[in-house]
Structures are given as structure tokens and as C-alpha cells.
Length: 165
Image (cartoon, rainbow, N blue to C red):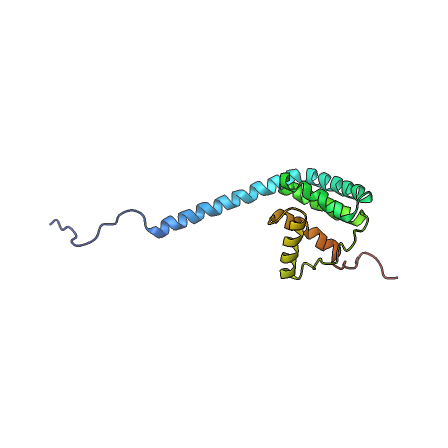
């Protein structure tokens, strides 16, 4: 006797959840590959970056000795539009050293809020970038964050390797 099933729907295609799981699996694999590529890139570029950072410290100190604090900021912001992400990091290192070595500018830190005051920081950065000719420039805002670090330094932790007197 040949009995054929009746009224049973035929399965068509792959279940939607299997497609979603497959896509998520591919995304996780690509993310893992991206992490590996970034780690390899950073490890191969670390020496070069450290040399660039040391050079930026030297240049910042040297420039600061013959300029005032506002000129340090103007110099760094003049390179901002042509600088990539790594160059901007190097420029912030330059700025940090330059500000420390520079001649004080009148009222340089007067209106600068600490980074902990978020709303005041946003307002100040927008205003300062506009004054430096970089209105609505996010890179400018990140760069002049160094001014906040300079004007409101974090307290240093005591060096635990030193013995008490």
C-alpha cells in the first residue's frame, strides 16, 4: 500500500534563525580578524610611534621656550586640517610640552573649566575653537582638551617606590 502524507506543508528554504546565526557568526569572525590586524599593526608601529612622540616632546619644549602659550595652541591648530589621527595624537603631545615650556599668556587658564564639568567643557571648547578659527571642528575640541589638562592637572599619585623620609 502506497500512502502519501496528506495536508502537510512542504518545507521550503532555510529557517530565518539559521540565517541570522550565520550572519552573526560571520560578523564575529570579521571582528576577530579586525582585532588581530589592529594588534599586529600597533605592535609593528610601536617603535615608530614612540620615536615620533619623543621627537614631539623635544620639539614642543623647544618651541615653547621661544613662544607664549597661545602661540603653542595656534601652531598645533594650524596643522589640524592636514593631520590624520596619529598625527593629532603626536600634536597633542607637542602641545602638552609646549604649554609647559612656554611663556605664560595673560589669562590663559582663566575661563578654562576642568574636564569634570561636562557642560562647561562642551561650551568652552566650542567657543575656544571658534576663537581659534576652527568652529564646529571636533578635532579642535579634542586637541584643546590638552589646555584643560594643563590648566587643571590631575593630582599625581605618590610614587610607591620611594621610601618615606
